[in-house]
Image (cartoon, rainbow, N blue to C red; front, side, top):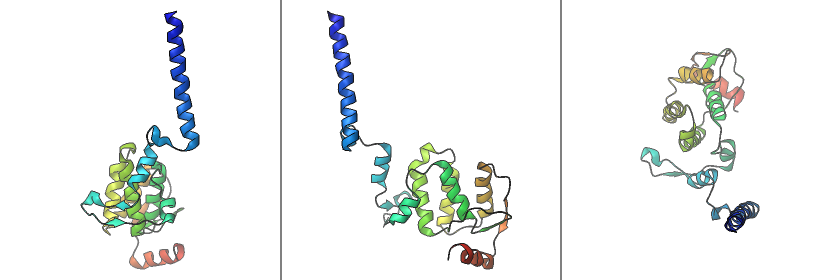
Length: 177
């Protein structure tokens, strides 16, 4: 008799657990169980703050930038964005990706990396690069490019030097205007 009662209680608990999970999934109120990691991060980023550097100023990000650089970017996508932005600053024989390294884009990507740094293998590298770029320092862009390029198992298109100001202006005209 005790075994049957125990089985009934366990089965009832399992059924109720599934019912609660699926009902909240379909209704869209996961707050009953607790927000997912993605939902928590979206709340944190809803305006982007730069408090990590002691600056309490809040920045608004546009929907296009939030769509381009969502908080749940994979490590590969983060590498691709940094790599593509570095192309505006370095000379390499082959460049397949082009992304203008704007202050807004750099700031947003830094927030994305800092929000996910515990889950990224190379977060310290990305943060160091992006903080330098945020300060307007692209003097190590060749090294930055090549470190990311090597992480991506690059074989063609190693950066060899910084572009001159004139070359950067031409690059901007060709790809961003």
